[in-house]
Length: 104
Image (tube, rainbow, N blue to C red; front, side, top):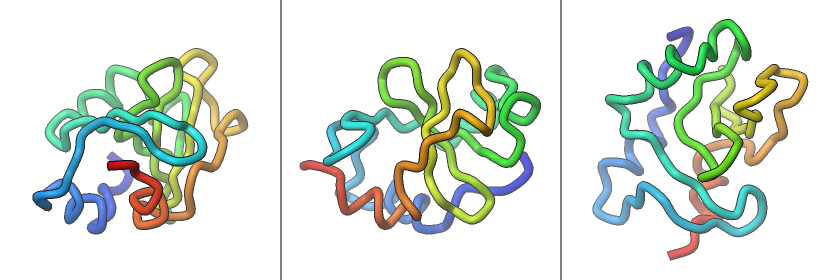
C-alpha cells in the first residue's frame, strides 16, 4: 500500500465507542468500515492502486461507492464502477471531521 491508515482512524477503531457501520450526517449518509486486516486485500481486489492512484480504500457507503483516504488524510468517495481520481468526491478533510458526523 502506498501509505497507511491515519492514526486517528486506528484510535477510533480501538475505542469502546467504535462502530463499523451506521449513519452519518451529510454525504454519504451511511457508511461501512472495512476491518483493518481487510484493507490491503480489498484495495488489491478493487485494483485501487491502478484505478485510483493516491487513494487507500477503507470502507464504503453500503452501495456503489468506496470511501478512501488520500495521502493527506482527507476522505473521498469514489464510484466502484468507473473508479478514477477525477470522479472522487470529498467527504471530509480528516477522519476526525468525519467521526464528528457519525450518528449514534
